[in-house]
Image (spheres, helix red, strand yellow):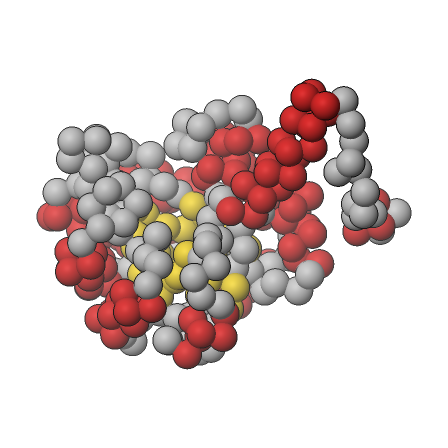
Length: 268
């Protein structure tokens, strides 16, 4: 097995039992810092990447995302899961082609979501959404990489917070070949439990981007994987913007206290 095969195998093992946290770095430095803290896997964040480029979420083209995946994968030794948004295409065949490109970067997994970007109809039609996941599954199988495929339903993100429809879609994505299921912005214990029960025995990823639960409680609910999306990046931006605003508005520097020794973090 090569190093990428080893990471993919390790990523599959993490999904087989227990509950692990897979935080989301946005660049090489944040990825290496999280790895040093002992996290066993990491995941990219489309929003975190976009903000480093001075763009809004989902405004980074496929070629730049692929390069970002290569850079992050090469920077760490743990498995990296890719936030691959909607596969950078609508047509299932093109989604599959793009998934093959992503698989070549050395990632251990990726997610495909069902948001359309159309405010009037924000979720892809059901059959199309399922076929897109099926195409991603087929592409992974053809690539020979066995990376972990996560099927995401975005109803609670894009203004369609219907738990029954979310569960219907996640079950269909599981049947279409998704290894892991994910409905971001689910924020009640009842909804989490309902999703875990509905797609069992397949593992569920839970996004925690607000303090509505914790790792221990999520594990008790049967959640297998926890991610934080762009929230760590947003936390970093929060500290930066608050300090910069104080300088701009008041000419004072009170936030320049008790700061970390970043050089020490990276061995200098």
